[in-house]
Length: 165
Image 1 (cartoon, rainbow, N blue to C red):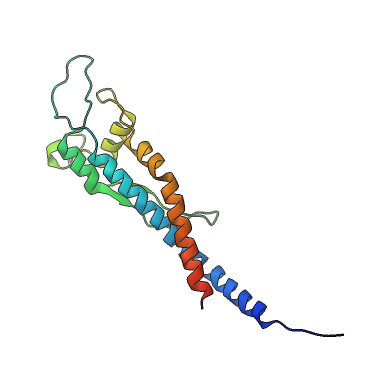
Image 2 (image 1 turned 180 degrees about the horizontal axis):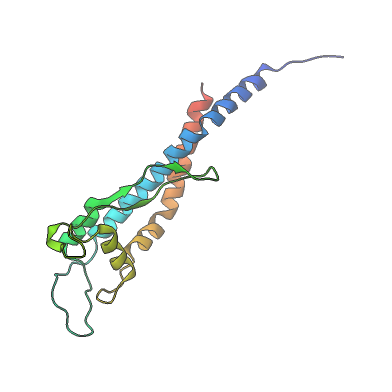
C-alpha cells in the first residue's frame, strides 16, 4: 500500500494557528475601524445640525436648533472608548461624549457647564424645550453598510498578512 505525506497541510495548519493567536488583535483593528467611521458620521451630523440662538421661550415654543457653543462642545467631546472584552469574550467599544460645554452654560446644578452627553441626549431625544433631532440614529443608519464592509476588509487584509508568514 502506498503512503503519502503532505507538508502543505501542516503549513496551512500552522498559518491557521497564527490566525487564531492574532484573532484578538484583528478583532480590535476591525472594531476600531468601524467605530472611526461611525464617529466621523456623527461629527458630520453634528456639523449639519440647525443652529439656533439661546433665548427665553414663549409658552409652547421649543428650540428647533442648537447654539454654536453647544455644537462646538459636542464636536470637542465626541470620542471612542478603549476597546474592551466583555464577560462573554466579545470585544466592544462605545462612542460618546465626555466633558462640559464650558463656563457660559454653567449653573448651580452644573458649575462646570452642561455635560456634553446631556446636550447630545436632549438634542437626539428631544425635551420639554427642544424638538427632537435624532442625529445619532440617522448617522448610524447612513453608514451601517459602509462600516460592515470596512470591518470585513480589515479582517480579510489582516488574515492575508498572517497567512503570508
